[in-house]
Amino acid sequence: MTSSFLRPPDARWARSTITSLKWVSGLAAAIFVAGLFIAPQRSWSGFLIGFMALTGLALAGPVGLAFLSLSGARWSRRLESVPRAMARALPAAAVMGLVLVAGVHSLYEWSHSAIVDIDPILTAKSSYLNAPFFSVRLVVFFTVWLLATRALVRVSEQSRDDAPGDRHRRLRTAAIFVLLFAPTWSLASIDWLQSLDPHWFSTIYALVTLAGLGVAGMAAAIVLVVAADRRGEVTAAQYGDLGALLMSLCLFWGYIWYSQYLLVWYTNLPEETPWYIARLSNEWGLLTKLSCLLCSALPFALLLFRRLRRSRTALVRISVLVLIGRLVDLYVLAGPPLMGETPRAGVWELAPVVGLVALFFLVAIEGLRRTAMGATRPSPPSVATAASAAAPSAAPSSAAVPAA
Image (cartoon, rainbow, N blue to C red; front, side, top):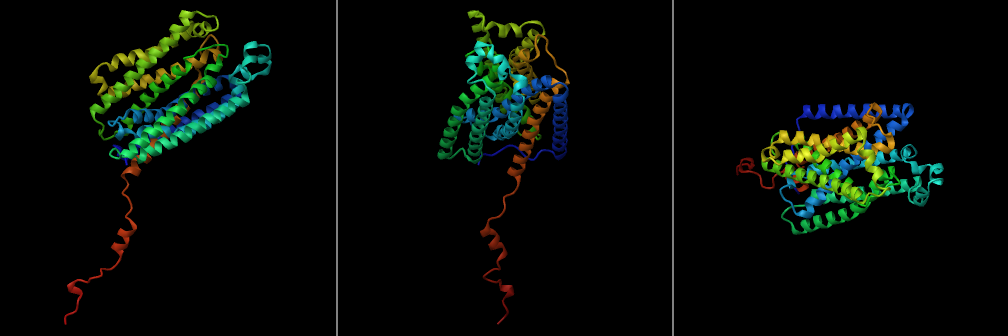
């Protein structure tokens, strides 16, 4: 079985961290429930952003695990407990997806028949964009992800580096996961985010959201590695590899973001440009630039320095900046159709986001703790060993034999 560098974390640190995250997520849930009665539109807006953050971080675990398996990377085998722990948050994201179904009419204009009947474009899309089919697709997406992730994690836990059959099984399972994930994530991105602007068209939108998933997932994985590495068992070279991966994903995010912007700017079509006009005007423009700075430009520039890539302190700070930038990015993606020309970031919008991100780290850290304790717990003796220890010796010693 693949070894893990993790040992049981410091009990005091684990208890305090898990307790704090429980309080944060519980308080955020209470605020969200209150907001459904006081400011439902604003609360559902924050919930959608938090739901996308939670789902993306949870899926980043198996996605990263699959690509590490496909690439044949061996340096990361001792760190694979981190993406496996991230994947443990996927069932919680599925439950939040069922909650999202209840807010369809507060979030998506295509769910209102009165609007669809007077809009030719929405009428043409109504066979796909409707509340019942939206709900069915959401259930299908999470069912596929949960089953594929379960198989991928099981193979990762049971595989050994020196077994050819295990390597083949890892490659096959990872390839199947990617083949299932690619179309389902593309459709989920369209359903949950792009359909907020149902008159807008983009053929690269799924790549934009995938790049955000990758950069945020890598940043979260680094934070979890540092949190679990309480005894400094991860080497500077391994931190350097994690920093190099984060740097490349930040560059990829910036490239995909600019590619979509360049295509829309170059073609200058009236059905495409309003999406960017809304996000480059007024305060939304400042937030868009801030997301580009935090998700791509700033971390890429900092991680060019080898000393910062190999420093756990610098790396975790950069990762936190990237996670903040990803939340700003999701806010920009979802905000204008829900909030109008002026961004709003009050308690009703922020509480669900903070609560669901805290829920992810709560589940992931708890998963790391359980994995570490299971890995270090001594295995019980076999039945044969126990029987031989309990049975009396067949040949008594000479001291027990009476003299003739």
